[in-house]
Image (cartoon, rainbow, N blue to C red; front, side, top):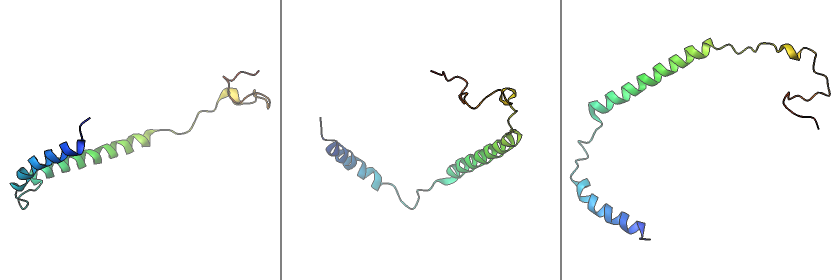
Length: 85
């Protein structure tokens, strides 16, 4: 199996001249980057607002189990599907 660090360093030596051509003072996210970030922020805000609205509609109160009134005795297993052996 070839040495991966040698191939990585070889690739970096070919990419270094390309990186020197880029002017560091001119590289910015620009208007497009701001628009994408703002759109993602608005989407997250809308999803959170929608989730909050939907969670407000949820009723967390459980309906009472009609079989749990007194039909279960102390020696009956808690799980209805469990088998007594």
